[in-house]
Length: 251
Image (cartoon, rainbow, N blue to C red; front, side):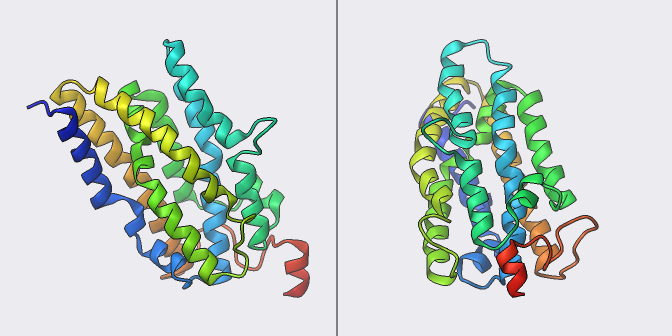
């Protein structure tokens, strides 16, 4: 049975309530101040790979869109991450966070120390957006429905528990509190409008589940590598390496 827009939105929101990665043990550890400096650094390194691929994902999406109005609406997402003459962008803000936690900026930007599992998960998301229907691609982005809550929790938790946290280092999250609502309002309205059959609603819901799996699997890998059992995969960042010069000198 095809759900009404209100019923279908409730179904999508329930997916987030059950599956969003704010419930992952690593986030609870991070936000409560339980992470060591190196565990925070590992999170920053691996999350950068996701951040750096978001505009690539959005460019792949736009390359498939015939409707100029949809392209215009979507274009701001790339600018929010890559930056403009007036806006430094999310990627730059994330690299500032990397510097604040004591990492070498160029090393983080190179993505050399990213775990294989992170790459597999993020690259799978880029391919999904590139290859699946436009409806599924937009639906996958609707994890943004749940992002403002986790950004607010993260800002509060990091400020309370870590010396590196200040307005400059946390600028990425503060800006997303302003940017994400605009993106999700458009994306949600578009999905609710286009998912006008049970088949399309099921496909959109599965796409959103896929995206929550992408986010959750990244934290599973991070927790296994740097928390418990602390088995770092070959090629991934090793604690104590590629630190900023002032941090390395003090170590």
